[in-house]
Image (tube, rainbow, N blue to C red; front, side, top):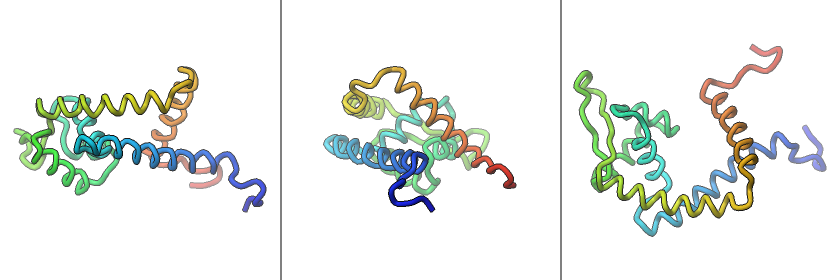
Length: 157
């Protein structure tokens, strides 16, 4: 156990900072999107559907967003009721549904992304492109390791 004077050590500080930054960012985005009747979760789902290849299934979207199927289903139910996304039957497997952002959804997503971009510009103001690239590289590696399952520690199997 590290001593109190060394707490938190850099590795722990990094993981705490990642979690805390994500929570605060999401809260700020939610606060601003609420004015439009949207949320960060709706933004994530709609953007993931919009930027995914055609005929991407609901299961694939849930994995990309990093949420469980039932959570995605509830969000999709609301988005579909608002006319922002639609579920299309998979002609080769009726159990699967393909997702598509509707024209109304594209308009809403544009409004959402405009707000998110203004917030992002404020967050990253005065940060160099090099710093952003280094952070992206580090976070991408961490996400890859988490997606694949953490590698074992030396001497561990």
